[in-house]
Length: 76
Length: 269
Image (tube, rainbow over all chains, first blue to last red; front, side):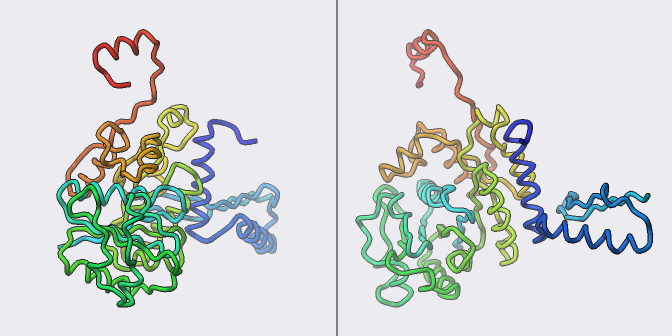
């Protein structure tokens, strides 16, 4: 169960929804990207695929906000 | 020079028609000549909210098809001078009209010298939406502080921009200040942060809106209603005045003594 006040919960859920709408990218797509990334990198480096994080995030500038994919890959 | 403003939202049931009715009426109360155009073909409601449902003779589709002249179809409002309704057709569907035809229709209304055309857009993002925004110079995006409504508003804003309508302003409808204060409802700041467009106004969730809609009288006419005041402020902002957002106060629990004291001083509950 999600914690905290429902107003904050709503805002967090909404942020993610709007972001994935804007880039037409669902959680499922992100998972597929994640699996592919693991495959590609594992060919070269031994990575800790269980602690890999791949998230859709957004950054705001004065004029507009833009989305980016944040990947963190721990190397073994 | 007339201005065409579309009232839109994406999601249904957030208060588009009520907003269109109040803005149209409010502009007429400020002395402007206004046509309120119901673009929700097949599901017309603006006439009902305005209390004009018994005066409709012709509709928008008949004007476009040339069955009648524009002036024959315009329904004069019963309260405000200079306020007219162009009803949608009830027995047709959204494909009866094309965006090009809507543009032409709005041009012919402009030629009659009206100051404002307020278009009530249907819910959704299909043909009806495309028709409604075709002739618009500006947009008012109505949303409520709910995830689904704000999400849809975000898509609508994107689609408006893709269609060259960059002047889109937000109305946050049905705010419950007591819930916002408890952080059990998103605030205007939360919604603004996500949608990143300018705010035109906020409307409290109030009984007076339901009551006035029941009667077919826009709440903007109600001097005692906070929601009415909020709409009057919105109208002034549309006219270019710089009015601060209405201060919404959570209902304060008062004791019987305080209420009695207030009543003796002539205050309203």
